[in-house]
Length: 466
Image 1 (tube, rainbow, N blue to C red):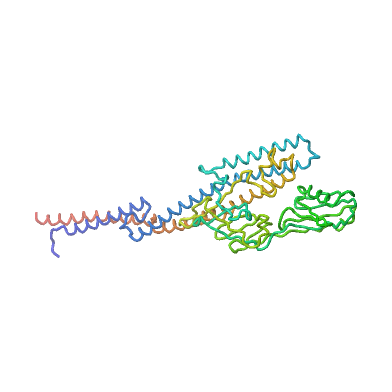
Image 2 (image 1 turned 180 degrees about the vertical axis):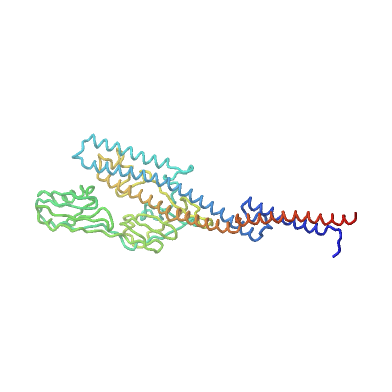
């Protein structure tokens, strides 16, 4: 090959040098940002995948924040309900102590009454002041709105959850068989009555009934009725037969009697007998029934209601339950169909209790069931209120555990998987990229050295011309 003077080698080396410099710059960019894809030309398909995964991660992060906020709301409600439950236990204790009027002075019972008044005021204050982000949680504002089409047959409707996608629902309610009280015949007394003693036992406790020889059968009945607050047992007369009945319905209600002495007509006594629960269907589905209290889960909604005495004896349809929205709705996932709604009923003192025994507000001084009027019934009302608050708290806890917390756990697992996938596509391998940068540095230095060699060739040609 002839010896010529041109810049082909130099241009070739400069081209290689520019390419090496560009690769070195790309490596430096990757190492400084930590990402393999810093512009679309780095990996077009990878960029699309990274953007898609990033959008999913944004949605997951938002859903996790929503779940954590829901947890916080329900924690506030749970804590307040726990405090109300403690106050109700104190009220029950004070009322139970006051039933022993023989062991307490009037001043002590009055002091107990003052404490009950303060506890009830505290419950109402907690209900009024339990808020989250400006929303009251326990005063009924966050309850699911539900009504019965036949309030004389179905009453005290409470909804604990409903499907968020359908705020308006209707449930057909039908009574298959009536609930019964526990009942038994204590004695057939005929025309003559002798002195006697026997006990009557029910769900509230046991009382001793003392019969005088001068008593009529109706007098004995009235003595049993007078002790009903201690026993939960009432009485009736049919001809010469004396009957006892529980005041409550269902298999948990029972009555019994034991002969002590005297008139042998009472000697047979009564073995414990129980009532039966009503059989009720909601939308054709068998419901859970405790006496006349019905619990149901149907079409994504769950709640409770009570049959009235009239509704209990009605065979067939007793109307419908109509839901008209309400409740606390939480977003528990990334999709629009992952919302869930929970209802928190009013916990005011005038809402705690029931129409059969009375309401907690009646335990205050001057009320129909204060300690000076009916301490025994006050105990039953306090127990009923404790059960209602515990039920509400349990429903909130169940929603929190099986809806909110499981959603957060699932979203956190999804976030880990998405982060791993995005990292695999986009995150730079520092070891590999550092080795590549060293390679490019070596090549760059080599190219610069070779440019010097190319320059020496031109000098050699000039030396021939001297």
